[in-house]
Every structure is written in C-alpha cells, then in structure tokens.
Length: 121
Length: 176
Image (cartoon, rainbow over all chains, first blue to last red; front, side, top):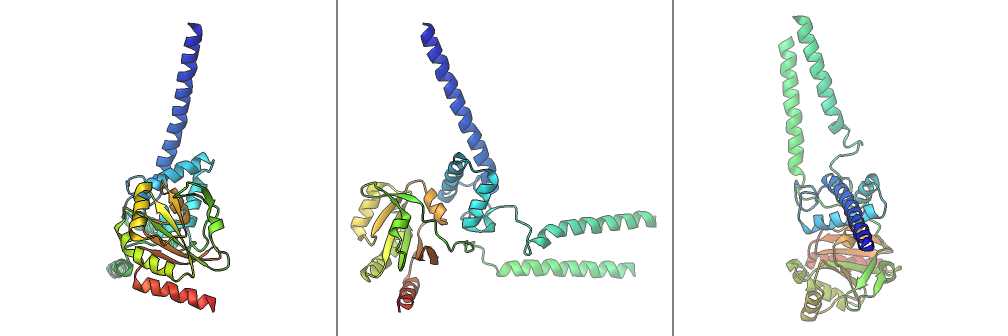
C-alpha cells in the first residue's frame, strides 16, 4: 500500500514539475512573440495572429528557448533572417534617430514654453 | 513678434507632418524582407517526403552551380499555377530543384506530384513550418535561386513568365 502511495506521489510530482516547465516556456513564448511583428498580417503581432506563419514562429521560438537561447538571442536570430522590421522596437540608428529624438525634443520644447508662460505671469 | 514665431512654428510643423505622410504614401504597404538574406542556412536537417530519410540541406546544394529551392504545398492554389514553370525549368536539365513541402499531408503531397508531374530532384518535408522560417520564408510559394550557398534571387509568390525568363537569363549568364 505504501509503495503504491509513493509511486502515486512521485508520479503526480513529476507531472506537476513537467507542467511547470511547459508553463514557463509558454509564458516566455508569449512575451517574445508579442514583440515580433507578423510579417504577412498587417498590424498584428506574432502573438495575436493565427496565420500559418505566426503559428510556425511560435513553435520555433519555443524550440529556441529549449535550445537554451535567451530573449535577446532570439530577437537577433529573427532580425538576421527578416531584417529589423520584424521587431516592434526599432534600434537607434541613422534611420531611426529622429523617431527616438522627436518626443524628447517636443518634451523639452514644451517645457520651455511652460516655463516662459509661468515666468511672464 | 511672439505671434509671428508661433505662426511660423505651426506652419513649419504642419509642413513637416505633411512631408512625412506624403513620403509614407509612396512606400508600398507590403513588406518583403530583403536585408541580410544573402546567406542560406545549409545546416538544416530535413526528412525526405518518400522514405523519411534525414538529409542535410548542404548535401543537396550544388556548390559550383545554381540550385533552386521551392517551398510549396498541395493546399496552396498559387503553387498549382507555378507548377508548370517549375516543370519547364526541370526540362532544361541545367539546374537542380529542391522542393520543400510546407505544412502538408504526405498523401496529398504525393497525389499533387503524381497529378501535375514532379519537377523536384528531392522533396523535403517541413511539417510545422519552422524550417521554412529558418530559411527566411514568410509563406508559400517561395522560390530561391542559389549559387554557392548565396541567394541570388528570391521570389515571394508564384513564378510567372517574367520570373522564369529572369532565372534562365541568370543561369545562362553565369555559365558563360
């Protein structure tokens, strides 16, 4: 009887353990796929899309995580394959410097306007 | 004075916005990845469609001449359209065509080939679509013209008369 109990416990614990492992992976897959653009469905992330391309991407992300790749390496892998467009957050480069700088410039500009208004009063 | 500056700033800003959107109009809406795609992943291991034997892609690609990789599926209608062009290419007997069967049922794929003819020297299987992604594909059909592990031409979508002519031109040009 004790043996059966023991086997039962070991069995359920391994189940829980395996389940947890899988859950961890799928959470990471979700996180990464949210940051990747689905290239054939406009305006959707890989996470949102159910297209063949996106489904395969999710499987591949899962595989890469199992291979021990971290998030950055996975982004780099896809960038290498599909160009920078596939990640939602653009890198700072000559082409995208305006994109990053404009909000900052507007913020400073607005700040100056407010200070001037206050000091005039 | 102050009013003037504000006016000028507003005008400049609207011009700027107009310019950005105007530029945006010219750009095509569809994105085709082009950068960094020159090299092809040759270390991928595929299964053969007929006997399920494992093959490394590298073994199939001719190092000194051209090969074509064509990604297809029996459920994909444009693939049916382009099949005649692949057969024409095959009949030239100048180039190896490697087919990658994308997310397909084995029986359907075999039926497709026996119905329409088999232009491929080797048909490989990509059941879950991940290997096609490693090759840089976004869907079916897609065709790569490869020379020395480098992608010379990449065609997204079905082949047609113009693309076929282009391929034949490139093959001829390189050989002479």
